[in-house]
Image (cartoon, rainbow, N blue to C red; front, side):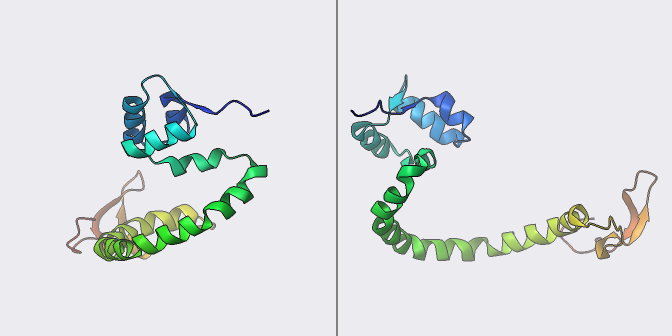
Length: 146
């Protein structure tokens, strides 16, 4: 005997960290809720919902068969989006570099097991709260990180 299909609600999606845009689109597509049936999955795809997110709820005993079944589709999808991903990664590379440079000092301090405060970007005076003040190696970079 076949079990009952999984029920999806907007509340369920939000509780499982679905992005707000997808939750809103789900509400519009399925005003009450939606059972995971072939008909509803196709309706979701037509509406622009991302159904692959649901694979995290596949029971462990079924996940191997699922992965084997969709392996070819995953391979075709990866090949189809590779050129766009390459362009995207090239376009955001400068922003990623700047972001990583900006967070590196904080990350270094947070992960420093010795608790050492002698980081290259920390040259300068500290006020009584430990904040940098006055001249710092960070000033003059033209990036607004002083």
